[in-house]
Length: 413
Ligand code: PMP
Image (cartoon, rainbow, N blue to C red; front, side, top):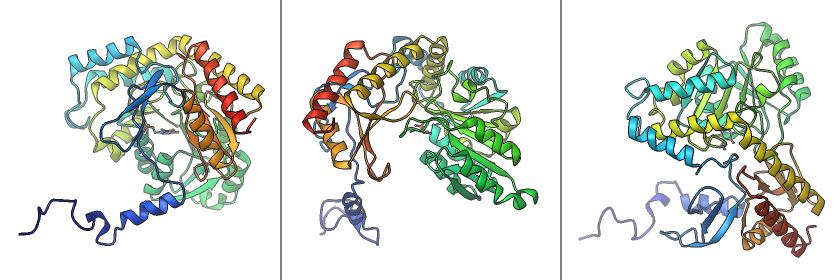
């Protein structure tokens, strides 16, 4: 009698047979410093306790720390009003949509949030997706242009959309409209022959905290009769609730705007806004919409309330105050802080230094992730901090004190 055929404890681990060699692949990731681990926290906003040993089955939480590494920019993820809205949606509509929107998963609540998003963005219509990732992948693939011009640092979901589309992808230099113009000019003959072109870019880049030159990108696209698609994931909710496209008055020149409900809007899900025809097309052709269950009603309810609060403007104003204080404080300590948005990448340089700094900050009760090469270019490893609107002034000072002490200990400032 051999052992239990389902047992995975005897002999060679099944995933390492049949040529998959997952252990080797993991070891290769280890060697390149690319091995990641999940590290649970006990709540998502403000003060949280983080698991001491991430590999344990049940998390053993350490001391309470201040989270400076989340995208919950407006601090709404545990806001009473938002929590109430989620509860109300669950009670009234259900905990899950139960089916794709095209089958029986479409509710009045989904429609209401889509109306709110379209109104906020000043577009004809909006369409919800199950995540920002799904919105980008599904939209780029469904548009299926002949050529996609894509910023070098675009988010992975855009990159994956380019891979799925049956298109040639031309990558232009990061935030460099000159590089985009050159790439477009070099192919003008093909455009004249009737190719469809899509330029796609993040508005706010999550690792550098910088902003795409959207107006120059629109100029270039118009010269070559291309469409522009902008991913507003990190800007949604922050500029009168709308994003950089609205701030720059480019609503009429950007054909496709994508975003997420999972950052400032403190929920889950993604969206596309644009013309009625665009949305009509996507709800028929974007496979990540068609073949995925409608967004869970509590997520829709929470996002709707968060959007309402974001549009009032007081939360974003508090966020910008916190950002200004942290940027000033870090720069006066001698740190090199990139970007021009709520994302503050504190560049340390060496990848080991970045990790050491993150660990020392954590010893002092500040959670802020080290982002190291090869995620960012060698020599630019960094700590990415992002305050939320609800960090108290004393908490910002605690963060700065930790940066000062840890930086001195490590000879970084
Ligand atoms: N676009 C950008 C620029 C992002 O940073 C992210 C999330 N990290 C996404 C899209 C994906 O959004 P979601 O988390 O809702 O899938």
